[in-house]
Image (tube, rainbow, N blue to C red):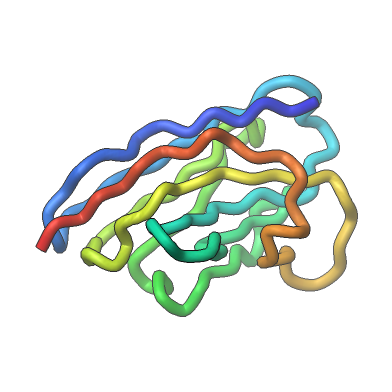
Length: 127
């Protein structure tokens, strides 16, 4: 079992920055990919950024490319999402996710490809 706990959310004005963290504990060895997803009120959950276990070639949704950066610490126990130039449309609950299944090519971007989820952290961007 893997436990994921997000932190770092909050309220910020448009143009501001936030850094989300996701602490992973439990049987984390063997995680093949992690990702950040978000869900705005009344909308479906969408993928934001994804990173394979080796940290090489992260993947971003077009809506955040150039503004958000996903990273992980050296022991892959903490996942980060640096969010810059925030926009009101970035307002959502942000979730960290992980999975153990092998994949080839880019890390999966569908929520269905991630079995472990955190409880979420709220990000609110005001105009």
